Length: 259
Ligand code: URA
Image (cartoon, rainbow, N blue to C red; front, top):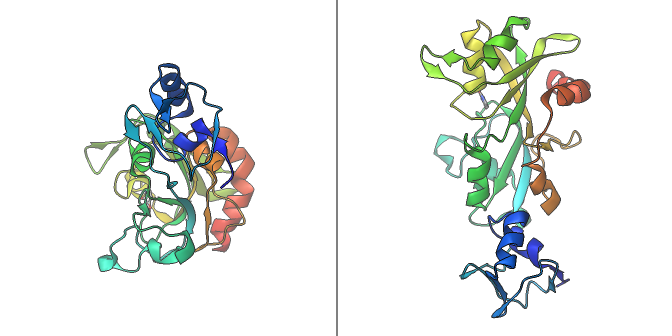
């Protein structure tokens, strides 16, 4: 197998970030084949090395990350008691036995869904404390009103009491019934319930970004791709909501309207 850097070996197989790995290496907490290794750029062959961090052996197998463009009609679960699951859309050669959907989209929702066997990373994406934003485009049954912006930003109440974290919302240029929404949490049917609270209804919903990872426009519904390490790192990069809306409104409104 080709050689890779020590920090990459660890970050692809664990929850440690590159900066944590650097710190731990400096403190002598990393070993390669039983010897303390302080330089993160040391090259090693993943098949031939045993690496430990703080006394814990890092498994040689890499985690897998799949980005699926979820079509309607599939449930985000590994259990098919409520219908066909998104797991059935993953080709066998990309599947591992511990994979699961890192996040929930409703059965009738569309768009970006990460599927992985890295439980720690899934937790980081989903935890409201981590504030990884998710952006959705929605088709409403009534025109967007500018008053939604303040209501969503102020941390609205839904269903007469449940308080939401402040969220962003923006009209989609030239389409009065389309809107972008950015949430940093994932309550049950949250986007739908937020619009219901302002007397509107979501007719169609598509997730278009998770953190800084944007749904590729050429990924068809039902198709998936394996993510590279740099794409996974994108999940934790900031994405400017306003800039995103102005850059992608044409692409994603066309996809949603033509669906
Ligand atoms: N909010 C919803 O209402 N549904 C989804 O599928 C995702 C977010």
